[in-house]
Image (cartoon, rainbow, N blue to C red):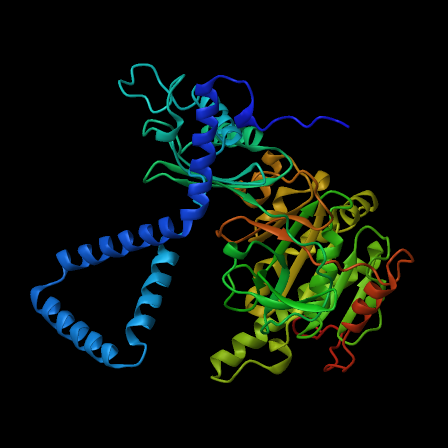
Length: 511
């Protein structure tokens, strides 16, 4: 039979070692046994401390009133059956609750987070320090806690940071800002978009990691007023409102980028620029589908790929052209129609009458890739289509004519930007080209992966906003999913609007 070892207290170890084990054993057991009493005692002490603080801060008249009410309540409770017992049980229960062990969350960043903040601080030293500064905010082996006011981590990655920078930093120069933003983008972690908010008055810079914009919103009937067109969707803090959208059989609110047209609009025309496959044609299709609910439409496909053939013969669609001859004839009619509307509106105002009904119905001109038609017209010695567009672009606001242009980035003619104040850039383009089109650089870093319809929008002199265009594929394309095809076809109007003549009038040449 195997021999069992003797207990530790009976072994032949030294006496002082056995005594230490006995003391530790007794202390552990005493702590377990007396833990309720320790908890209640701690709670009573906290209750007494709270009562002492209240008594020292309360005014004298309030003390007397409280003492009288307490004495009366104790007298009534003492007369009740089991009153003192219930009071004692309630007092012990509250003391046990207040005296419980409270696990406090660790304060401050973890060791890994401190290392990341330290590296970020050291990387900023060459850019935010200057020789001769007696008390530099950024210096090697300095304290990063003086420079970083607030920070936030999520799953070990930096998602928000607010830092101070010295007053002599040239925060008004785009080149200086770009260097700091590029550095923070690299050190905070690539693969995400970051927004940079510069507070020049207080010398603060706030970095925020932005979530990716949703790409699951498809073409649908958006809740808008007449004269409003949804270009796409942006961040919640960049839009002044939200609209309900349907995503995967569920309805949720999304912040839109709304383009407003009409006589009082400051951005009556739009220009979308991007590379092939960036989603420019998708944006123009989405605009066309929304425009047909409130006006008439002319669609010109300069690429000749048949992206707008699904609009042919639909109510409200006056013409869909892809050839040079048809496009020139359509644009010439649009120019004369704009002039006719201007004359009709002017005569009505001079006579004190409202504008005619046919001039109040919006006319939309969608021109996709006009540079292709311009090259053909130049080769054949014919009129440049862009010259025919000058009349609608100049006077379309007063005549109720809105023009939406889509152009490839490589073929962009900057003369097209003169009369267009609403501008959209889609796809991955160089920062210099984005600034040339929008007139300003976006305050966010470029996305690592740019899906179709992803880019930036700027309406007039407003801020540059992130943009995701709703998916609006060509329903006649065989690669289009059947669900998306049915959604696009369902958006086409069914009621026939008032017919518009394409013939020239003898006075103005308009229809």
